[in-house]
Image 1 (cartoon, rainbow, N blue to C red):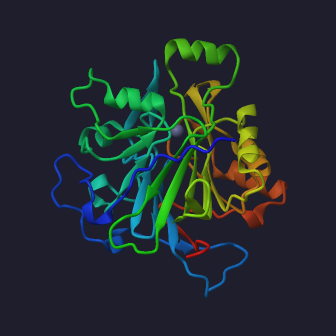
Image 2: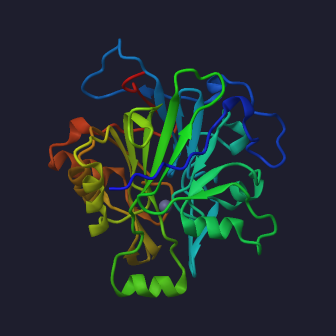
Length: 349
Ligand SMILES: [Zn+2]
């Protein structure tokens, strides 16, 4: 096997790129976390060791929007800050209404962030207001398709700092500045299919209705001089993205090769288009598929997200809870409300 060095995108919290185009403040204060309205902090359901160093957390904002905090950096996933009653356009003839409010009202209310991780270019994951307000230099890691869209010269203001990852490609994010303990994050694109294989996929490719999507493996750890990829993992997070339970997902345990996922964020909702009055095509996992994915990936802890924020999501959290209980997996799931945070320790810290 040839080992090619993992491409690198350094993050420096001392020299953050402003998040917004028309920023009112620089978002440069390093400890701004108090500004997050945290409802409840949850920890591991089984080994709640109060002496374990709690060094990282996931804060659930709503839909697939979460804020990952590790070391001195923060990564925002799938930014959607629309409110109840707002509409999104999800493809030809498909619109959907948001039913919930995000835990944080807008991008400007966030603590300083360093990177956006975008699973796919779809309005319920990257709403139009977010797109319009973002600084074009802000770094975003996403799919090749989303990169093409966001950097297209046909856009009035194309984005200029987009990094595309195709399935199983990785990007290392060493944390620079005053962080002397070599903290780093490694992001790897995982397979995902938003449309079931077969004639519908062919039709969708032609229509361009539902964009291609990534899942993510987000590893928290340190840079290393002794491993072949220059990275030492201390915690593995798998984010499913908007996928169905398709054969491609079986590549994930093969890729992991016996390494354990600590935390899985699973996009549920059983999103069905065009909508509940004409439930023709399910494009995200329902409760039963979510449990199937738990069995396939076998994460230590699972946190469901993306389950009730839009009226096209027909499989709510109860559906998943029922399936989890039936499978005897209740002790392996942590349920977060919008505004809750899951805190965990990273090995080797
Ligand atoms: Zn979605």
